[in-house]
Amino acid sequence: MEIIEKAPAKINLGLDVLHKRADGYHELEMVMSSVDLADRLTITELMEDKIILETNKAFLPVDRRNNVYQAVAMMKNRYGIKTGVKIDIQKNIPVAAGLGGGSSDTAAALRGLNRLWQLGLSEDELIAIGVEIGTDVPYCLYGHTAFIGGKGERVQLIDPMPQCWVVLVKPKISVSTRTVFPEVDVEKISHPNIGALRAAIEADDYEEMIRQMGNSLEDITIQRHPVIQQIKDRMLKYGADAALMSGSGPTVFALCRQHSRAQRIYNALKGFCEEVYLVRTLK
Image (cartoon, rainbow, N blue to C red):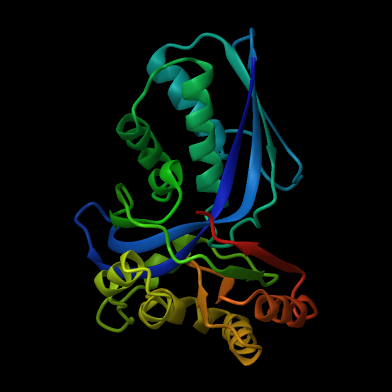
């Protein structure tokens, strides 16, 4: 039996770091939405009790260092699955980019295995597994537009963000989220109004959504990598309605209501960075 799952990229319309929790994680408030750039997982059942991962990116690990492998091993152990599985991951989302590619792949694997092995697990049960692997996995199990709280485990779907074009630009650097959060000083970072952002989206007010967007982690990552600010500046210069870093970076995204402006930004940035994508928001 073979199952195919799509794993879309996410962008952070808003990200606020509130404080450090007793468990060492940071308390977060975020609004995320998915975009039409996706990895593709092909999941095939094996009679032999083993886990095989394959991917089109040679630098990606295909053993226990890979979150998808961890998800499969956890599901097999937890539910006593004695058959094996092969998962082919066709990567289209940039890696270590702030777009949640690894988390989305993990979520897609959990959804697919739930179907393959006919486990009948609810979304809450899948979330409980996913959050053990990565804090963005619970959101990626849902996708679409959502408010996220806690360390990532509290997910509330909200009305879809207003439809628009998205230009994604990833510079030739990688950023590990684990290295960014230790530098967070909640007294010094900016704090976007996530409640106001959520209200604007639920009112389908594009202009107000643009005004309320923000990312607490931008200053930290931009200080390390000034090219992120350069990308933002270029996007705004060429007509972006908004330009913001996604997650802990380094990918920057521009929002545009008009396709012609999005195309102009895409063309302008294509000569500046190799990894540039023009996509739509997902309904």
